[in-house]
Length: 246
Image (cartoon, rainbow, N blue to C red; front, side):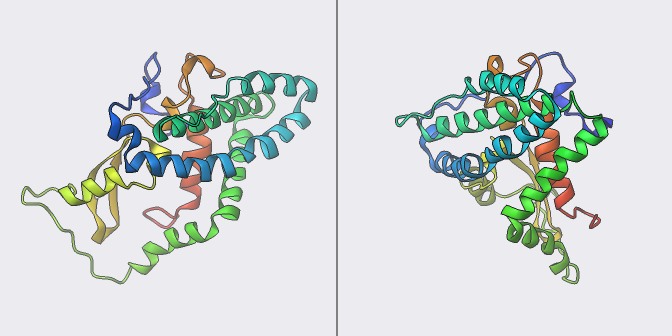
C-alpha cells in the first residue's frame, strides 16, 4: 500500500476519540435528522446487503463456512439496537457503527485468503459495481459536471483578504443541511471556489473512525481503516473522474 493511501491519523499509536455530540441542537437539529434519514436509506436498506449478500458468501467459499458463520455471529452480536427514544444523532451513530464493525470484520477476514493486490482489487471493484448499479444516475451527473463546465468562463471569487474561504451564508448551509454529513461526520469547508469546481473540506474525525465503539471492533487497538480505504476512498476515486478526468 502506498504512503499516500495511509490515513494520517493512523500514524500514531492510539485511536481517534469519538466525537461528542453535545447539546440539543447537535442531537435533534436539522443535520441530525438528515443524517438519521440518510443512514437508514444508504446503510440499513442498501449498505448492509454487501455484508450478507457479497462478503459472507465469498468468505464461505474461501474458508471453512461453518467457522465463518460462527465468527460472524460473534461480531454481529455487538450490534447496537436502535431504540425508539434515541435522538436522531444517536440513531445515525448506531447504524453507522454497526455497518463499520461488520464491514471491517469481513475485510480483515478476506485479507487472510487473498494476496494484498488481489484483495484490494476485489473489494474496490465490488463496491464500484454496486455503486454504479444502485446510484448510476447520481454518478453520471457528478462526472458530467466537469464536462459541462469545460467551455465556460471561469472566475474565481475571492474574499477581501484574498482567500477563497466560504462566506457566512455558505458556511451556515453546509453545516446545517450537508447531505454528505451522514458519511463524513463533522466537516468544515476551508476553500470554496464554485467557478472552478473547487471545494476543500476538512474532516477532523470521520464517522467511519468514531461511530463504532472501539471495544466492539474486530481490532479494537487500531483505526478501522480497511473499509475507509477500500469501501470509501478507493471506490470514490475510481468512480469520479477527478481533476484530470482519470
